[in-house]
Length: 297
Image 1 (cartoon, rainbow, N blue to C red):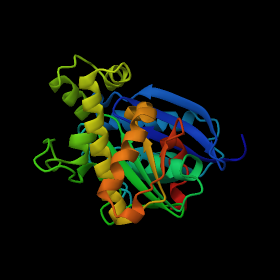
Image 2 (cartoon, rainbow, N blue to C red):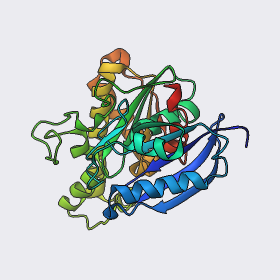
Image 3 (cartoon, rainbow, N blue to C red):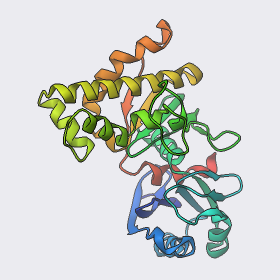
Image 4 (cartoon, helix red, strand yellow):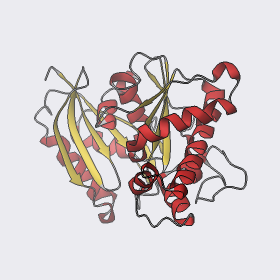
């Protein structure tokens, strides 16, 4: 590994990951521990600090980059009650960690750091305008233009989950009715499948049935891909990206979904926009990599 650039932390509701990243985006000494969110934010932050200090490059680096579930303010370094982080309302995360480690600390939401990682060293490398979309339990995203993360006034730029894509669609707590997340998340796919009479417990099983030729699964997956295409087209009318990068657990089925999305997408955009570049996210740890380059933004 070449000269280390930063130590980075990816805080999730289930696990905390911490590693050292160099200027070429290479990862070393990747640690993974349970978040134990139920023990409170002070406990979790102390665990993050302990993991940071365990990195052998701790004395060499001056930057700590952190990806955290939102909502949050990157400018203020404050976390505002993420749904999967209980008791984290108005937690000054940046200030707390900076005081303990005496280094510059940069904070961003987890989808944004993943977008930055993919745009810098992953599937978006070499493209001017990148729209990253992660589809797993929920739907999130981030925009990177000319290598710079676009966060927006309220740190919500690129957060595509609340875009309305279907009239009278599904209702999800804290989101618009018929939202991208409500219609096209992994959770939504499971609901559709079970309503269609498929007895499945995860998205992978739905796609397996699709490949086996189940008529019900084929209808469910086609309708699901249609909604993803509709959401992407809505985004494209605003930023017209050079590439869409699709990540998250659902995109393990990228080979199935990509041709369907490409089939449906053109009907929702101007004819000149009908040809679209879609790539599967390629980094194993995009959030870890992206967080190392937050200071550049």
